[in-house]
Length: 494
Image (cartoon, rainbow, N blue to C red):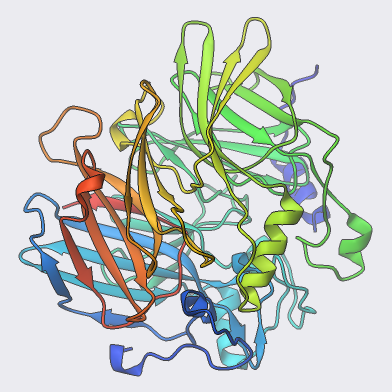
C-alpha cells in the first residue's frame, strides 16, 4: 500500500473537481405544513435574531454551573414558498446560553455567510444546497460559496467558530455572536475544509480533518489555535465523512461505502442525490498515527453508516472505538425527506457499538447494543483516553411521535445503563457533559442540553446530575419561544 501526503496544489485541484425579540418570533409560514406538533421546529425561522435577557427558571440551578453553552444547527429552512428537502441544508443559527451571576440569558443569531447574506437580500434561494437541487444564480467559486456554517461550534480564547464539514470555519464574536468572517488557519491552508467535529484533548490540543475529492486533510492545532501540523492523504475518502475518533496514539475514521455519481452531479442533481450506497462493499477502517500522518493502515468491516463517535482509547495492542451505527444512507435520507415534508417517518434506529481493533493481527471485533440513541458524548476530561461512560439522547416508547424523548448513560465497563424518560410531550436534543469544578472522577458533573415541549411549543435548557439521570432534571430554564432543532454544542466554563 502506498501512503501519500499530498501537496496543497493537488488538494485544491481535487476541490475544484469535486465540484428579535421573542414577541416578533414567527415560524416560516410558506410551504411547510404539518399536523405533527413535534415537527413544527422544522419550519425554521425567517432569518431574525432571538434574545431574552432573563429566562424563567424551574428548580435550583447548580451554583458551580457557570459559563456559556453554545449550540449550532439549521435555523432557516425555507424561502419564497420553497422548503429545503434535507435538514442538513438550513442556514446556521448559533445560540449562546449565558449561565451565572444569578441569571440565565439566551441569544441566537444567524451566521452571516456569503450565501446567507445574498439570499436574505434576494428573498429566495440562489445557490445549490447539499440535499436540495437549487440552480445556481450566483457564481460558485469555491466550497465557501455554499457554506451554511450550521453544524457545530469551537471556542479558542476569544475566537468562536461556527463549523460546517464542507468548508471553512466562520469566526463569531463569542459575546454578541456577530460574524467576523471566514477563518483561515494559515495562508497555506486557506480554503481547505475544516470539519464540524474537532476533537479537543484535555490539554486543549485540537485534532480535525476535512475531505474533498477523495482526499483527507488532517489538522493538529494548539490550544491557542496555532497550526502545529497538517497533512493531506490520498485515501479515497467517501464524499460524506462526518466524524472521527481520537485515542492516545491514533486518529480513527470509519469510511462508509459511499461513492459519487459525477454524471448525476453534472446533470444538476444535489450532492446528496448523487451519492450511491454500495451495500456489498465494506466500510473501511482508517487508522492514522498521530505522531506521523504518513503512517496509516486500512482494515475492512461490513458496510456501516456512522455519523457520530463517542471516544477511542488504546489498550495494549488494541484500539477500541465507541460510536453509534445508523441505518444505510438511503433509508436515513428517506426519513429526513419525510421530515422536511412535515410527515413523521418510520423510525430509523441508530444503536451503540464498540469496535475492538487488533492492530498487530489486523482483526476486528464488534460489540453491539439495541438501544435507540444518537449524539454520543463523553466527559471532556477523557477525550482520547480510556473512558467508562457515554451519554446519549434516547427514544423510549415514543408512541409514533418523532424524536428522542429520553436520556441514557451507558457504563462500558459493566454493560449497564441508566435512563430518564420525559414522556410523550418532549423532544430531546444533544446534551453535553460538564465536569463539576474541582472534581476529578470521570462523570462527576452535570448533563446539560436543550429540548422542545410539544404542548407549550417552547424550547428549554435543562440540567441533570450526570451520575443520577433517573432522578430527573435538577433545574430547567424556559425560553418564551421555540428554536429550530439543532445539531451540536459545547459548554465553556466561566
